[in-house]
Amino acid sequence: MRASTAMMFSGAVLAATAVSLNVQAAQCDWPAYRLFIERVVQADGRVVDRSTEAQQTTSEGQSYGMFFALVANDRASFDRMLNWSRANLSANQFDSTNLRLPAWQWGKKPDGSFGVMDANSASDADLWIAYDLFQAGRLWKEPSYTKLAYALATQIIKQEMVDLPGLGPMLLPGPQGFRIGDVTRLNPSYLPLPLLRALAHEMPDGPWAKLAQSAERMVKITAPRGYSPDWVAYKGGQFVVDPKNGDIGSYDAIRVYLWAGMTSMNDPLARGWLDALGGMRQSVAQNGYPPEKVSTISGAVSGEGPISYWAALAPYFKSLNDERGLGLARTHLDALNTPNAAREPVYYDRVLGLFGGGFIEGKFRFDDNGRLVPNWRSAC
Image (cartoon, rainbow, N blue to C red; front, side, top):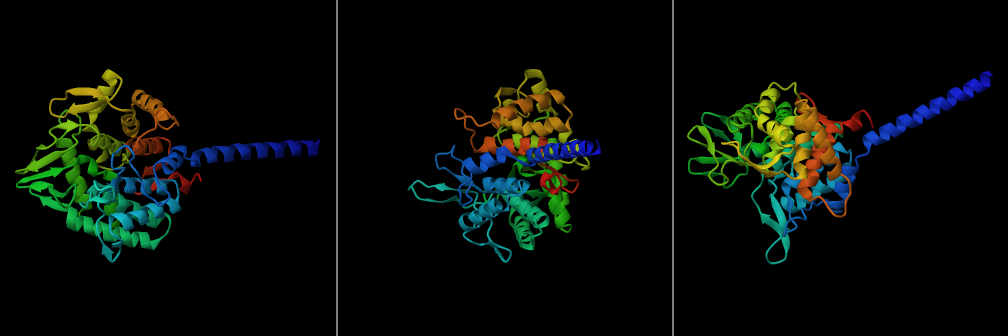
């Protein structure tokens, strides 16, 4: 009897262990990331946007790919993407003692050759790469990543930041072409609060904490109807409508809601930042879908946003405790991340899907200091 009982107990333990391992494997597997690596990232580490005629690669795409590799604990892919960027976007001048900001656009040029198409850098990508490197240095215990992150962040401060009268530190979209006369053009989606907090944590004597305050003011002031614009301008000590793109909020601005939704609610700026963007929640509640475009001044909306908008809005609805909105977003995310030969997601759809889906699935979060907390540190 005792032997039988022992065998039953042993069998129950083995069964429970198997269930636990299966749950753990499900938590640690990330099919959407595997599809991203398979369909979007070349073997040499180049992230390709095949929806463009030039089959372009952007520094943004490289920066996002490195982030996802870190979340997935995929150091080999991280290094491939970093090395491709070093060689092709920075002309092999991307180390801690000699660093050239990466060109933002690389692809097929008019003469048929492949190479840099626009040598100007994109500050959001630079910010993400610096963040990726700082977090990789900490999580993978690799000092060379950290040294490179310091070097890159230092160049961002030198080349891509300005002090605007009446506002304070602000990130230019790039070193060249965004200050015309007395008008400075800015992009609200370039300033995720967790990244600014993490850089402030790593470089406490830098301008990052003040930049976070400037960014919060920008988001609040430029969203009078609760919608963020793609682009804004600063002139004469105040924010004005962007002279090139007007007051439209669409494909760039959708990331503003995404970053806000992923920010730790313990951050003192998080709640006000999120509350300033309430127009999108109201629009989805009224219409059942996010608008593709919105006039941020009048609040007039047009079109139905693509499936990737739902991915970007999933963390936003989660942080707002909006169960209906989150439920709708989950349904669309499932469709986005399910392989479908008839509807192959393009580059931007995939990255928004990885950010939004990865966050609400618990693959990663950001702590109160903006540092990355991937689930492989505990569940895997």
